[in-house]
Length: 246
Image (cartoon, one colour):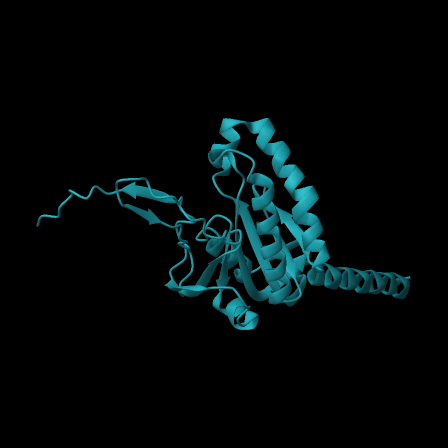
């Protein structure tokens, strides 16, 4: 009986050890290198305060009709929803970059019909890092860095970590601005990053402006600034009698 009891006890211990091993593996999750795309809505609280039901309906439509299908089309996966944003993972930085560009362009085109103050726009960031995948979620320092850098991006634009920038190379027609070494919250080491605008439409052809009779005119054409976005064309009448005094 003692032997039988001992055998039963040993078998139970073996089963428990195997079960404990499985639990440990599950808690550790799967680690692998991935391009993490973090995104959130610019001014989400202000937009929701102005018209909660309308903004929420539009945001859900953007997710279902634009964002989620584009992520899938580039072999990515949305792994976390944050209410006003999301995290997605991709196998390569280039796939994440193409998806980000397409999303920003499509969202801009959809929201352009609304008043400027009520438009939904996203900030996005891509970071290449080791990620822990577990229970349908993602964890790791690289995920936190993506979330922090995303907050520094321009509306309709994208921030790239130095690691992501190195893998991306130099896409044609894309101008990257070096943000330098950035000190991020709760991180001891600085992080270098780059930014670019993705939602800007192609510049329109210049249209000749008629000169008013009797007085000369100066026409100032539109220009782009990566930090402030497109500006509105302005014209200014200058009187021939105007003089400059120091």
